[in-house]
Image (cartoon, rainbow, N blue to C red):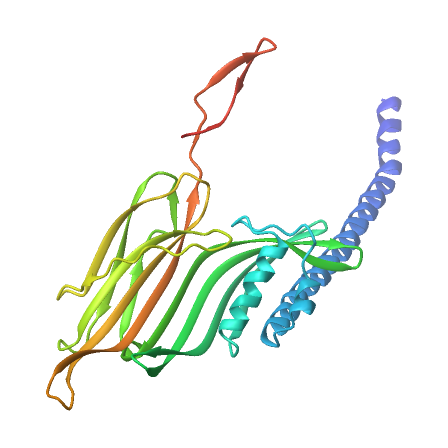
Length: 311
């Protein structure tokens, strides 16, 4: 009985100390959590500020400033390194000197000294094209959803890679500026598999003679244009083609083109077809490399599964 009482007294004496210790640990945990949360918030803000700086450099066409935001070993999901990527940026600015960009940062995730930012981007520009010695004004609109990968080196954040999830660019001239068009293709397709590309053109005037073409291009550097085979657009305004995704581990563009012509009578009362509008839609399809995981080999007495690209 005395032993039991002594044990209970010991518990009563020790218990407050134990509770005090638990409170202390909880206090430390809460403090540490607050410090960690503040660090995360600070890094989140730094990443967002870098992306805003990127947007500022692109809208002021500051190529050298833009380069400072990327690591020298930058390499994106299309296989372009820093030199290739900035060559394409410069060519875009040369072609569309008034292009302007917008960006919406959807989310930022911080893991240690790395970050993943999900963004929605768009661009607009004007241009002109000479058709039959007549200049017609054109408009470019582009939109994309991308993921940026960043790393903090020292006190600064840098972009190390990016992956474009979806992308569409529309360029129209003349009468095509007022025509609604859409190009429907899968955003993701397995290498070597067939997929359908569908061009839908909503023609407000049946007197328009419209021709269309749909082509397939691998996303490469330097870029290689697809062959264009035009044919008269049916009355439904729908043109379709079936493609087979490449097996070269390259993402692809589907490129649709339309030409609008009208019959006009010249001074000599001759009927002549005049091009009054041009339209282009470019849509991205990302290709998943096909692998075969069924091959099992014996190595050092253990089974090991190996992946092999399907030819």
